Image (cartoon, rainbow, N blue to C red; front, side):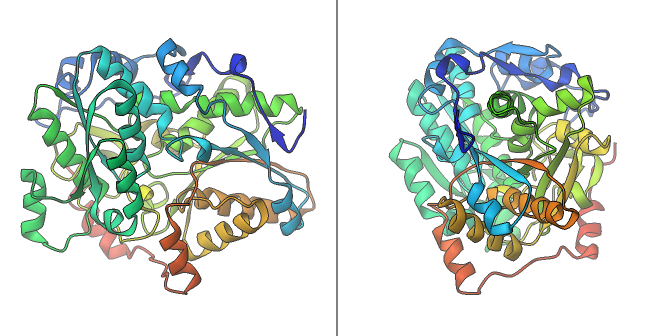
Amino acid sequence: MSETKILLTEKEMPKKWYNIQADMPNLPKPPLHPVTKQPIVPEDLSPIFPMELIKQETSRERWIEIPEEVQKIYKIWRPSPLIRARRLEKALDTPARIYYKHEGVSPAGSHKLNTAVAQAYYNKVAGIKRLATETGAGQWGVALSQACNFFGLQCTVYMVKVSYQQKPYRRTMMQIFGADCIASPSNKTSAGRQVLEKDPESLGSLGMAISEACEDAVSREDTNYALGSVLNHVTLHQSVLGLEAREQLAKVDAYPDVVIACCGGGTNFAGIAFPFAYDKIVKGAKVRLVAAEPSACPTLTRGYFGYDFGDVAGFTPLLWMYTLGKEFMPPGIHSGGLRYHGDSPLVSQLVHDGIAEARAYGQTAVFQSAVLFAKSECFVPAPESSHAIHCAVEEALAAREAGESRTILFNLSGHGMLDLPSYEDFLAGKLEDYQLPEDSLKEALAQLPQI
């Protein structure tokens, strides 16, 4: 077994998803109904989700079977490779061993397809004909359009306007697979029209796009809503990442000192980190779990821990999470997939309890590490994934300074071949770092719902 590229066979693929809710010392407070402010019941979610996903959202079972139909599609690209970044190690002159889980090999080019296939499957079984969703940088929109194509479903994607403009090829990919891609905020929904009345030049946000997609879903009986991050069932589906990585490292008798992933809504981080969080919580493993986010949208590092809506219009349940406030408007940074005001309640609770930690970075430093990685490893990473790369570089340099061996694992959540305009701006010196002003943060948090 080569330690440079560590593979699993199809027979070694996970047959069950791991549900961290079975093992957390403290669970997040329950979601609240947006109108009554009372804990939601399954029937409250049935207008937009199939019952099987609702069950997964609230399940306390440790292991949940992956349907055979989903496993068959997973086998197109799973198990994904775990690669030791030897050239990056050499470039950094570090004694650390750096491994990355390469999710850019999926047909969508990112980890998002792991949950998109599962969600499309459960909706198909429930008799749903069409899914509505939002997307930030476009990876989720591409993944869901592909998954809907697998199962013969229609797909409508509300894409955050700044990403719609910055990343045109991702919307083209969605259209190739038959999806209708709409720049958000749009005139298609009342939520979008309200935003445009206040600011006709709005760049949009994930919170706005979620409002439009939810409104779309509840307006049609044949349509459900699909979310690519944040919710518990999405973290569940992404657990294949960490489960595979743990088995791959065991093949070379390695175990990480630190596990890293970028973090926007949180399920990319959850996918790689939660199986190792099990080791930490249940078995006492000394592994550190680090979520890397942009300093322009510092949800985990500067946000408020409490209830907030998941969208701007207040259609979604109130979630117990770290939040910058649903009215927060992040600047148009190139990591569009990380421009979300809130975070996964499960990830938020683990960070609050000290089981996981978070760091925030400016985009120029992130792109510097992305270019170093590309030169060393020959893969161009997505801007979102590059936050994890930068954190791994920090860890490797810290190991060099301390003169200690350290095993670093990070998730390369997607490739950046459709993000080249962002790299073009970086190479031309056009990128700026946005440090969120304290007064802007206070203004956004002042509008939190009173519970």
